Image 1: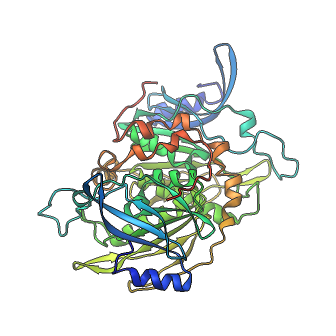
Image 2: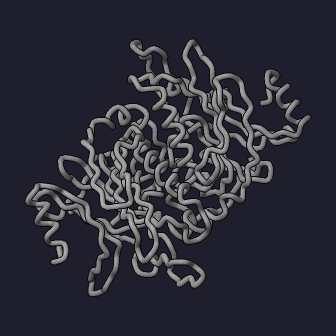
Image 3: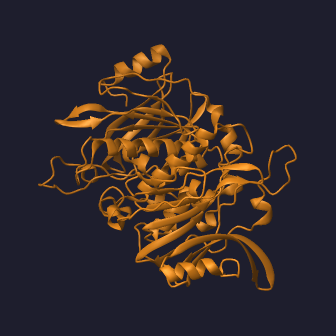
Length: 242
Length: 242
């Protein structure tokens, strides 16, 4: 990056002094091995790449599902990201990146805000239909909205979620790009399923009150009781006897 | 427990075969030492105590704040719970307990659902006014609602949150008891600031689709990237250089 296809984007952004987040399918060679990641980069207003994130929470499946209306083969085509959840200095803020399904995992947001993330930037591409079982589209959007608001609030961070919308391979994407304030309020939201620009003049200091009171991690977090989060991967039914 | 004050509650519940959750200030003696905890118990329909939880996330402060309209001295009067986040077999379910401010900490829910929690029961007592800085009451209720819905959904669990409402020492409590489904939808909500009974016939299997697809922890969680959650308590601004 930038490759010839996106070079005009880099050039135009630099000309206007605009930083941006860009997601792409990354073909990498590491230690002589070809690897594929679902990747995003932050590009500064000077056109330089500030940071790179490789998606950790790959949804979907690795096997072909003949009964399904469409396939969700992220687990087949991509490897799990090997760079962790990180933040960078970007446009006078501390910004972290996530991708799509990461927005459903509170662990990801917490690791970013433990590193001081003031903005979390995330691109997503979510079909209107649930591949696995029938589900009302409005309920899927509801999940998207409640999670975005709760993640921003309980991490006292700005959250910028950018949707691909329209149709892909004949399947509709539900859109709903958002900028959410650390107060857990949607500051701005896309209104259509067409190309659209939304923007908001985000006051980074809006998180300050929360960070010094309710979400003062140093005062309130208790990692000695969180160990299972890293010691156990899947759920195991393990009731106590007292 | 049960002490003489709550013995009639235990008796009546047993008579009707009703299990319940009860919060109280616990005075305990452990290894000859007097200790105070903010505690909740689950009581089975046979009147026996099934489990005990001592609140981990103590909010507020330990020092008197002369400028504040009221004091929030949980950190003065209580010790941090020393029994962790646990689940119990209760009424043919796996049920975990939390208390009040725990509902703002996704770590707590995750530890419970990693142990198979199908229901999370939580009592809370939240003033309508923010002690620390002016905040619209409706925004405080908004935080309560988005977090409850997101926590239930992203943990694929039923969530029962029971408010104390009315006035305490002249200060108003915002109420809003809830039962939230694993779909992230509020199944039922209290409507007033008076004593009120709300109930819902919760289908535990409503979580099954989520648990085998989107929130199949074993398939999707990546604890190797979550280590900071237990290795770091407070936030430290630690941006990456690439």
